[in-house]
Image (cartoon, rainbow, N blue to C red; front, side):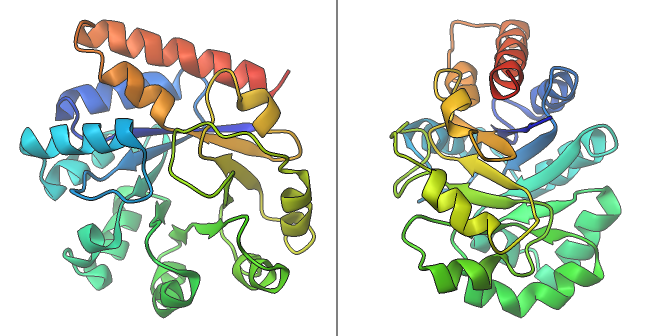
Length: 246
């Protein structure tokens, strides 16, 4: 069974909604939830996620909101934090990673920290049984792919193309996938540009998909009530899970 990872922006439109949505997604086919940490300059994310980040910050998001949301959902849904390094660094990594483990958060996704710099925190993550998710991109050489995936934990985030999330570019991923799987048994999940229309093609040869902008597009629809947003996101999850496993 191939896995579905869903991204949502924490605290948007409000903290209690994030909790309700996360729990509903867990019941609708989502295997792992990425709780996005709102940040003023999310360089790897497309316009939809960037807009949701800014709106969450305008509404007063604080890092403590992430902790409160996580405490409610981590016992029920496999939970990761996705954010930019400055957000985590300001909390003191030596305190934050043990706290993440205590809450039940199983990993962090930090797109702006290169592999070489992430190694400085390897012992801290390992000691607390928290994964620091590894990224591989089409621009990586064979030797670099081998180095990055050699000790990858939980899953490998395979960037489906060079660019930002949500733009849906199409390309043949099979040679890239083969070069990753040659060096690791760790599952490979495809991210960037995955939605209901592209999921079936993107997941070919991979172990799962990571979907963000398709969910955030629903959350940004101001004409929908909170319950309607949760219903649409849940329906999307069921469609995605069916697409990647059919």
